[in-house]
Amino acid sequence: MSYYQKYRSEKVADLDLVAVRKTFEMMMDSGQIAHAYLLVGPRGLGKTSAARILARLVNCEKNYSKPTAAGEVQLNKKLVEPCGECEACVSIKKGSAVDVMEIDAASHRGIDDIRDLRTKVNLAPAALPKKVYIIDEVHMLTTEAFNALLKTLEEPPEHAMFILATTEAHKVPETIVSRCVRINFTKATAAELSTSLERAVRGEKLKIDDEALVVLATGLDGSFREGHKLLEQLANRYGPITAENVGEVLKLVSNSRVEAILTAVERGEADKVVGQMEELEAEGVEVVSLITKLLLALQVRLRKGVENQEGWSRSTVRLTRKLVKVVPRVKISPLPLLPLEMVLVEAALANRQVEGGSRKAEVEVVMVKELPAERKTKMDFDQVVSGWPELLARLQPRNHSVAGLLRSAKPKELMDKFLTIEVFYKFHKDQLEQEARRRIIEEEIAKLWGPISVRCVLGERVVRQSVPSVTVAAAESVSTDSSVETAVREAEEIFGV
Image (cartoon, rainbow, N blue to C red):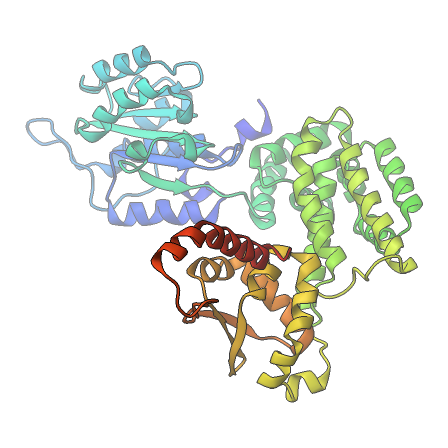
């Protein structure tokens, strides 16, 4: 029997996810048991184990009153841990309890399977107080099967309980979700993984360094099942298990290697990036794990930039975004390391061009901090008015639509770091108030005059009359030409032609 099966949780106190354990403890204290539960979370976190514990909890003899003269029993107002000794607990643990049914929705997903369930659920339990249905991967059910299940969840028999488990809650219809008590299983923390692994270490009397256990717990992707599988693999391959052994099995990348890669990228040393990638490929590194460590290192840098009020470098932000986007490509690539290598080399080459001065420095901070002191203290409305053409010139290459919209507007007022811009068309106002366009304007303004927020107001449009008095007939004869000219002029104002 594998470690994961041998050392899976058997009672509430054994649940390694703290949040789930507390939820079960509150349920026991209140004695309030729902007729349907939905367990949601990634694979390997103990959803099925928790479902079995719940099945034992509601069937354990210790949680029921003594039978009355009529043979009836009632669930206690406060529940205790399953004893593990009564007939109900033993049969459920062995998997021989006929009243506890585990259904794999991946292979029993049709409407006929659910109709059969609906027929049997109304029958009284054969031996236990509660009849429990555990439906794993419930999101795999067909639409028709979900509709059939819904009726049973709406009006379940008193003796029935449903425990639905899924890794993809978004595929479960809202009508089903709304009739269940949802319990979320999040990825395990390193501390929770260590607690789970220590149980197997003690049970198997393994010799493992404390550091090795820490490295194993932190190197996993939050999965108890994966952790026990790897621990079993390590135990079969090594005597005393060391941190080096764990690193070899997990194909872990050291922090120093990660820093070396990022340093090479920052310095524009593309050749060194390629060298690092060749070494990692030879070592058989797990690419997604490498990307995760790179992102964690970048996250630390970004947070330090905020804490130290230094802002973020554009190159760091750009690299972070590209690393996040490269993960799906890694998973479908015949050469998993190649998409990552391309992103890193491209970033290194871009930084080399910056240092060579062939384009504007990418290390310019995203968060505006260093602005000339005179612009911070002596800025006034007259400065904005006189600098308006310069603002338009700066906006033109970046976004000609925004520049065109502002070309037919004008600054109206500057007060308390708020610049009011007067526009004369509602369409222009709506366009300029869009989040993306407003942010572009504020970023360029910040470079000129410091951080200023922008808001738009609709001004009164002045109607021009080229001829003071004109007959109706003459007006009609030129109406078409005038409207065309107006449309052209407005298009020019918007798009900056």
